Amino acid sequence: MATRTSARSLTERVYVCLRGDILAGRIAPGQKLKPSELSAAHGVSLNVVREALSRLAGERLVRALPQQGFAVIGISVDDLADLTDVRATIETAALRRSVDGGDLVWEAELVAAHHRLAGTPMSDPESPGEISDEWMRAHNAFHQATMAGCNSPRMLEIVAGLGESASIYRYWSQRYGDGHRDIAGEHRGIFEAALARDADLACRLHREHIQRTAEIVINGVSGTERTTPEEN
Amino acid sequence: MATRTSARSLTERVYVCLRGDILAGRIAPGQKLKPSELSAAHGVSLNVVREALSRLAGERLVRALPQQGFAVIGISVDDLADLTDVRATIETAALRRSVDGGDLVWEAELVAAHHRLAGTPMSDPESPGEISDEWMRAHNAFHQATMAGCNSPRMLEIVAGLGESASIYRYWSQRYGDGHRDIAGEHRGIFEAALARDADLACRLHREHIQRTAEIVINGVSGTERTTPEEN
DNA sequence: GGTCAAGAAAAAATCCATATTTGCATAAGA
DNA sequence: TCTTATGCAAATATGGATTTTTTCTTGACC
Image 1 (tube, rainbow over the protein chains, first blue to last red):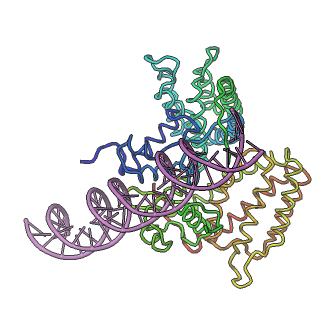
Image 2: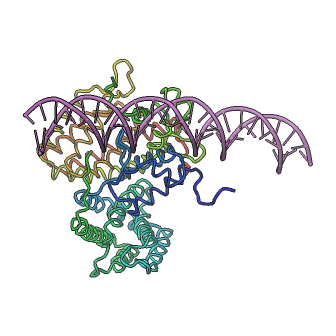
């Protein structure tokens, strides 16, 4: 009679939940994560929280400071610039391979992903200004789908990790769009270039897409001074 | 009276130890990791082992199978081919940036790293045929040093992860050289090209270096049928 | 009067021993 | 032979013990 929540163990459940909270910015970057509070909130023991946090520490989503507990990974303008740079390099490489070598299955799933993204409203009608969870999922899935044809599990895993890091910035800044921007159009451009097997164009558009996003986020972050120190 | 082993907590200590064992192939790829055995061997409680394993699971060095414990990441010829491909793409990108933009500090540390590598015997005199731990460390440090000038912490972290994955294959196959190969010369070539700021040459040599290594390992792995299934 | 240091109390992190649940293997029954 | 019960071993979860860090207080010194 287990719940069908696709979580076979308590640790797994807490891990997934915590991970979602971090990626969605429901827990602020840099914030301390107290096992006692979390265990109370989730109704589980200390050790299962501890284990979930350890796993997230391995993924670099939280930092483990010996004898000082855990904290969500911090954000900074420098890191965002670095992240964007790395994404531009690695993701275009993956995209190029994908566009050059993607098969029919890839095409079909890309079409599906774009259709889903295009049909998902960006902001929740009840809370305008905030990016909806659903849209963010569709958005990540779309970009992932463009590169899925590269036929390299490791590359896709790296790209997924980069995308997650970017998610934190996007969600946290909540300044994804600035009104003057046609995001749907940008996605359509990438989509059509990929389907047309124009790797150069797809890569150029993708690069511009992530760089433009980063610029807006940087303005949002630096404007409200949300930078957190990133000691090591 | 704490030991100066730079491990402030038991979990940290076990984590580092386990990680080293995996990377050095002292624990075979695919092997199950029983918390009870490990806790007995290290003289600690179950939970600290569990926590260390969870962290390694986050790094994808071990797999966590719900209700079935943990196992070292498996190896396969397909994965090695993929890994090599990804390394060729990402590491050459990092290397190019490094060679193009590295400063004097980078140069100095690269010289030091190469000197250390050149002065370290590849195999232990008491166990010929096996790659010495010391050489492997110097080797990883050298390749890392060539790319350190790229001025991108995230890129270097990704590269480090790829290098660790490659370590597992190298150590496990124990067939790094085949006699006909001048590894020191290959390293010197990369080193000199980097110092001469010849990015194209450095990248070409680096690519050939890792591809040649992979070929030899693939022969070694497939020859002795050491492939482990990689279910997901 | 203000600043800094030593010490005690509180809070938090870490660790352990044990209890509970789950999965696998063996064997009994149809 | 196939299905179903049962026992054992392993994985997981819990509560509390122990150690470390942080905070707060007190008093000496500048």
